[in-house]
Length: 166
Length: 160
Image: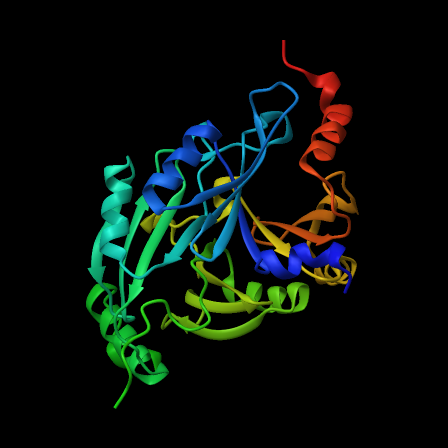
């Protein structure tokens, strides 16, 4: 493979989320403060205001941002576009990051708590309407233990009998 | 004795997209055909139909899926009418990926073509309404070159 095509191989994971946001510069500042992200690249549209493309590094992962372009149907959550994607973060200290995010202006949707699947986990919505779940693994469970925990949880919370999965 | 728990589990990156979908069990099969996804785990509700959670591997990355449960606020792009997050895939052979995705039934949103920023790139929509950008990097361009090319393409659309 020639050096010219190393970008995808060396710098990027296979999957990179690409978020539509309103007020990209403010969003970049928020993601840097809240999640410790670093800005790698920002490309302004010819109007000198809209951000056509920005790249951020968060832990070992990159993500992309761009402004709303309503004429292309690209609306952000603050522009009224609800979201069916939660950006999930695995980090060393979920409590620390969650607290930093809330202090930076995020809103808690589910407080950080020990969850049955072995993660300490919480969900928040950022000031631009995107949803993030943040987690730290606290217990390693075997597939069998995990299934047992899930059955117990579902029996308790969804009223499904514990043996209903068998 | 088990070792200490790895706080970031093996094989997981910092960022993993978690998608709310419709008909997740069928969609898993679509992702296998379209994107070469591998299923690592699934948890299905006692009704045998609702997908509570699935872990899939695509290339070196994971995605999580769950079915829409609108009464709990989990809605798919089909329920919502759009999505503000695209899932971007960088692969070595985007033509092959684009072919398998469209053959599997993905809807073309932006046909695959060489783009000014140095990628061969196209966008498809999956049966659940999620948007996937498919790309290979084919040419290194400097930020200045990208800017010039963008100005040529979009320059006439300057806002007043």
